[in-house]
Length: 328
Image: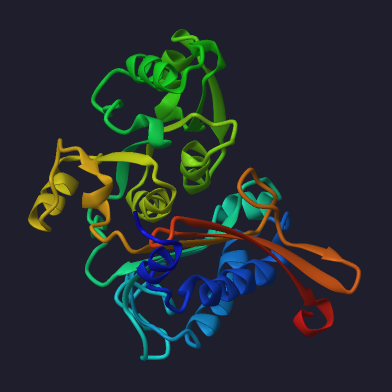
């Protein structure tokens, strides 16, 4: 039997990149706070991008943006292919979303996040040629049980049995989109309840995989980049995710195939992100089920963040207080 000392040695402690990256998501969230509920999503996003980019430059890593604000010609900062970090430290793939939920932020609605996901260099699937992906996300009980190709009613019954709870107590998160009208009907016809999300399916997926939340499963069609980001979190949580690319037409499908992607194929977690060394960092912009939003409390600005690290299986929740005078 392994001694406690041997166990500690085998953990191979290293510098926790997540503790540095959280400064970047906190800065993005704080910079976006002036635009919450003001109706200008582009201004909110611009402020968050500027702040995140400035802080990422100070982090000891050799990062390449794999999922960013767009192509170089369309995004002046945090564009796909941009190198970030100090140039020292680990070689990383980086996925950033300075605000996951710009429309939520502009409207003052819940569940807007600032997000960074990191994995070893070359391990994140580049699905940029196909914008949408069908996703199925749940907790550890779903492993070896669920299959995205099955009817949703069957998957609900299977997960309910695995979790030991009645179907009528199951809660399924779905993005509130016209394309999901039929899916929502099927979920309710199966006897389960829906939790309709206005935006931000990353948070929905994480809540479905995290122990002790009200969400049992997150399903539906959302952005392919968000699927990769969610996978980094799911790997740290020991949860379950499957994805199938959902091209809008034959032309997009052909572009995806030319880029090496597979259509009509179920991607598992280890194909979406091949590395088992992942980090997911998020700070709340507005209040949500995962973290609270950034808020002013007298002379301080308080942020609420989460760090999920697969190497140690650790979930860290961090509350930080900043001087409001310094941030303006």
